[in-house]
Structures are given as C-alpha cells and as structure tokens.
Length: 405
Image (cartoon, rainbow, N blue to C red; front, side):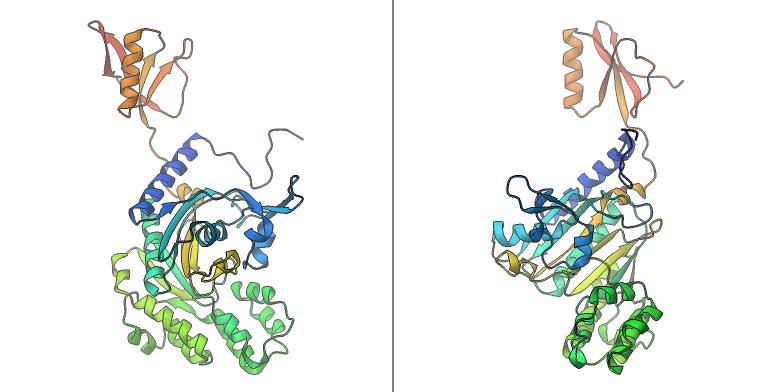
C-alpha cells in the first residue's frame, strides 16, 4: 500500500483552499464576537459517555472510539462540538443568566455525511445559553443567515421543524412499546411511505394517521406574516399540520412556537432567506427538544448548517439550562465560493544587507507579504502574485511595480 494514500473521505487541505477556509473562519469568529459570543476550544477527545450524552444512536455511530492507555476508559474523538460546549457552560463556567459561546475546529466522522463529503469536516458555530424565549432562536437564525452572507452565499433556504412533535405522538395511545424508534426517525427523514406503513402496521389508527401525515407536512411559509394569517392559510404546512395532527397540548404548543417564529418581522431583514417548514426534517442528533432549523444552499446535496433548541442537555453535567445554537460545515461553505485571486505580494532578493533586512521587517509589520527569493529559485511559482519588488534605487531599498509580462 502506498504510504501517501489517505483513508477514504479524508484529504489534505492545500494552500488555496486552506487560505479560503482560514479567512472565512476569521470572518465568522469576528462576526460572532460582534454579537457578544466568547470563543471556546474544547478538546479533540474526551470520555465517550460525556461526548454522547443525550444524543441518540446516530452520533454514537459517527464517533470514533479508542481506549485511553492511562485510565483504561473508552474515549471518543468528537463528531460534534455542541455537547462539549454545553458541558463547558454547565460545569466549568457555571454562570447565571445568558452566556454566548462560539467555536471553530475539526471533528471526525466514522461515515461521511454525503457521497463526496469529507469525514473530517471543520465546524464553526455559536451557542446561546440561559434564555428559553423565542428571541434566542431568532438570534441564532440571524447569526446563521449572516454567516452565510459573510461567505458570499446569495440565496439560502431555512427549513424549520420541531423536535417535540414526534415524541409527543409516540406517547399517545399507550406508546409504541419496544419498537425501534431510531428506525422510525430514519423512515420519516427519508419520507419512506412503504417503510412507514410496515413500521406502523400494528399501531393505533390515530398514531398511524398522524405519523403518515408528517412527511407531507412541508412547504414554503410567508416569512414575517402574522401568525393568524399563517393559521388561516389552508395551504400553509402549519395550517395543514393543525388539521392533520392531534390537538394534544405539546403538539399545539410546538406548532404555536413555529408560527410565532415564522411571524417575526426580523425575517424581512433577510431577503435572501427563503423560509419553509418540514415537520419530517428530523436529521441531526437527538439532543434537540424544540425548534430546529437547517440551511440549504445551491451546490450542496445536504444541509450546510443545522441547529436548534436543546434545553437541559447540561443536566447530566450538573446544571440544566435553556440552550439553542447552530453549527456550520466551514470547509464545505468555503468551497462554495469562487477561487480567490492570488494575494498581492512584494518580491525581495535574499541578502544579509542590514538596510534590506530592516526594510523587509518594516513592510511585514505594516501588513505586507514580502517573499525573499532564495538564490537559484527566481522563476518558481507559488500562490502569491508578486506585483511589486524591492530594488536598490539611489542608495536605498525601494518598492516598485513589476511591469506585466
């Protein structure tokens, strides 16, 4: 086997792409800081039970596991950073009131998200703790939309869902016993009608009707329309959901929250965002318990970002807290843009001349890129475009333009 071959869906990031990713990472972290989000850096590995707390089977299947040779305990390589940030908020910071945290770093997946996706995505995200109101959900969505705008994405579709609806349905009519609920979620996500019929063959008629209706409850929503207008619109997926689903209190509350979110006038500030609802868009990890959202952009067959409310995940770390946030696949997002033009630079000769060394240092301190050409390598190419050069003129080193070839 060739030693330079990497595992499947694992790849090096070469200079041009690495520069795009890093520049975007800096823009996003600066954006989050302007909203008051503080940067945290969770570890790459930690105890497996901490990484997988409350997340369901899907995250466990995506997580690489290994044995710690110091303690003998099972460790996991993080596949998702949200539980780590929840642990930091609940156990380490232990603040009262609202806490805003952001992060950026690599995660590792046992399986790729899509056919051409990497197993080592770079995630950037923001999490807001301590506020249970819809204002926090709107802030998270606004930050997501602005993140995509910072990457040059002209159009985005935001799909809304609510993670409390399916659990509420499954608790009705005596529940579903020992049935494989993870399989049900997969069938709903895939809108697999025959598979749903088979899974529901011995369910109560009301449960069968409700779960069979979920995959069809999707469609565009008029962003910023008043909640009563949405409920009167028979074509709205939320109006159809009220007609098709039981009027149980948790389900009615979930639909009301979605209607309030859709009715917010803040959507008018995001004209590039198309709003839709899909009550079967149950992808992601199972720690969510409220409004969830996913962002889809042209050029990607899967969501570029996912987020939502995950209240009380911090309970296992010693403190339950309202929480909402999102995570963006940074490397895929950077790849959506056009290749950037080569960065202008200054070419300088290699010399131990004190005046040259001082001039080069001053230019670099001023933010210029100065590349000193090593002897014998004058014609070699690299990523930077040297449009100027340092040359001796009238006894001093001077920057001058290089005439186009």
